[in-house]
Length: 234
Image 1 (spheres, rainbow, N blue to C red):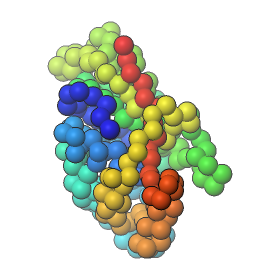
Image 2: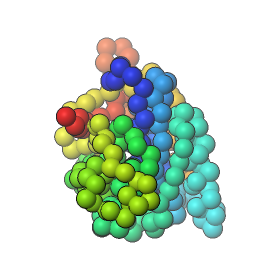
Image 3: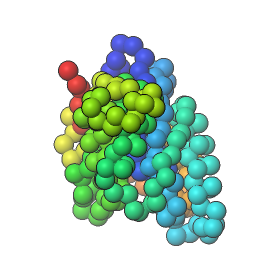
Image 4: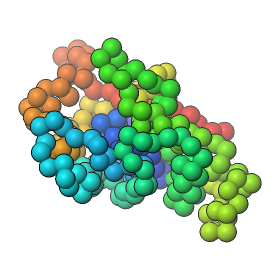
């Protein structure tokens, strides 16, 4: 499945290491296989995210950044950058918005991917992390109008960060999806990437069974999908 006739520069902006892989890692693998450039901007280093069975909490920031780089390499992601916010403390304030505006103007992506700031409850047994929602709110508020409007953040102009027009925003974990991608072929790549996040996933076979349960039997084959709300600017 191809969405664009030419190669695109895609910037994924989310809260924590492992969010890109969990939310839509199979789609990222699909995009990079098609020749699109994918980069990550993560707003925290995930220092509070740890599986109960993982003991090395003292070096968790180094561990999580290393795991994220290994996972991104499997998916074909080029660069990873981080903002300096504390895990669990992310707020959609004006400081965070300005930092994202600056990052987007610097990287000049065609496509931005984030997550749904309105999705509080993913299903009947999971509450969405507040950092996930905050990251999504920061990103959508930054993209319009701050990224493209030269009257916003004039100090950034002095730094050479001129306004930039993003072509599309893709919202992952959406309450209201309008784009569903069959990622059956790249699902195994997503799983391999997620398995690099050893501090997060717990016992490996239990994790694999859990991820396998996300498939839907269609005919005689198990199919996997990732969903988005896609916004195309005209």
